[in-house]
Length: 179
Image 1 (tube, rainbow, N blue to C red):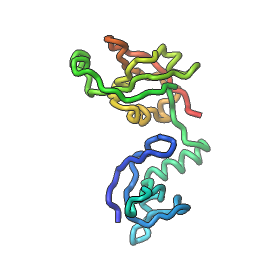
Image 2: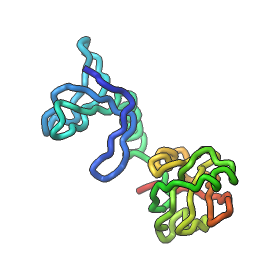
Image 3: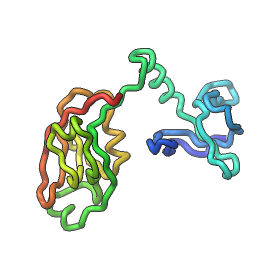
Image 4: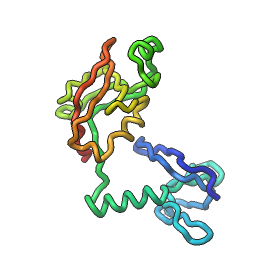
């Protein structure tokens, strides 16, 4: 029985896995990677994870995502992602800051660290800056930033909107491929 679609699941490494299927199909340790099928035999997902201690709650990666991953592996030998080289955390923004700058959201990503030689360092991003948009798409949380850093952005100049103290600024950044 499929009990939910489009769920998100955090991996052991901390990365968010989007668009997973929640099911009550029996999934025992070691069975990950097998197909989740309908009664007609159609594959709708790849069994991935369970919640230990929960009563039969399992998760599968949706078949459309699995097709995308397979195509990327065949084409490039790996899943390509872009990165900008920051460590960040989601922070709430003061209401007056949101109103003053006309922001679409009430939170952003505070830059906590910058990797030496990274795209963020080359773009003059600074520790303490708060990222609020990438190419004019609002960024309200660290997971939203990760979702926007797709393979299509590798090597392409992007506009990064930040708050630096009381100023709103736009920086140009060229995301690199995550290796």
